[in-house]
Amino acid sequence: MKQMQIARKASFKWLVENSKREQTFIMIKPDGVQRGLIGKIIQRFEKRGFKLSALKVCQPGKAHLEEHYADLSKKGFFPGLIEYMNSGPVCAMVWSGDHSVTIGRKMLGATKPEDSAPGTIRGDFCIDVGRNICHGSDSVESAQKEIKLWFKEGEVTSYKHHSQGWVYE
Ligand code: RTP
Ligand code: MG
Image (cartoon, rainbow, N blue to C red; front, side, top):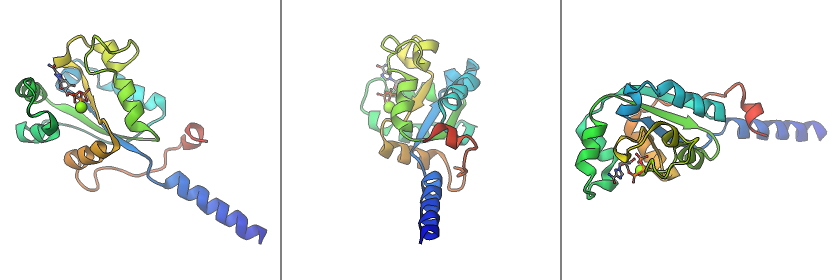
């Protein structure tokens, strides 16, 4: 009986450890890539304890970027935003971890750099809203949509990070 309980507890622990944690889509925009900030931004997510599940540098073109920012298509700044996003390669990433959407947005900082707190990515690296370095999903639902748009099936890896037990209770 006791052995069964131990086995059940162990398999529950395995399930919790290996179940898919929340994922967010983080993208370093063309200015971040050109200014050599990829490494610094990745380091912040690694240091926080998130797991890098996918990464690629790409320039997918206008139509793809218009789809990514479809919610903003009626905004006056939309054409300028698409031109900016299409002006060079971006670094697209999937980061996994509990609360990765909310924490990711906090790490990025407010949209307008004048409102971004120092210590955030935008608060440390930029001045202009039209060159604000990075994108982060604003909800779990948008994260799922964006990950599907930017990565093909099989491009997002699934593995147990070796420091999982030191990041999660
Ligand atoms: P993102 O989607 O890039 O992570 O940015 P966000 O959620 O913080 O802000 P959002 O409202 O989704 O805006 C998307 C991007 O559009 C540009 N923007 N320009 N000129 C303007 O007033 C203006 N407002 C927004 C920014 O690059 C913003 O990140
Ligand atoms: Mg947004």
